[in-house]
Length: 79
Figure: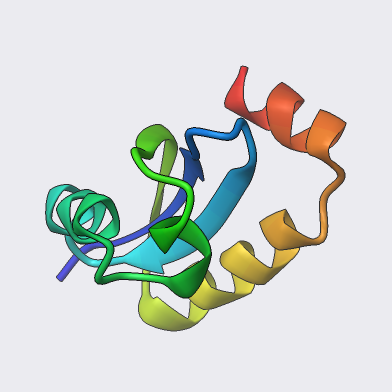
């Protein structure tokens, strides 16, 4: 099984960070409004960053690390 950490850009320009095993499915869930309360009111969202991870624990740790970054640092990470 593959694990990924991702960043979404919401319609209002904010970023949302999460982790998943299926990026396409997760993006569809976010855009349906069934994935996270934060993104539900900021639709549509688009995936702007995807980072593969070796396992679930690492993906969760990476998600927390990215969430702690400033907006400017996230922009640099995205490239």
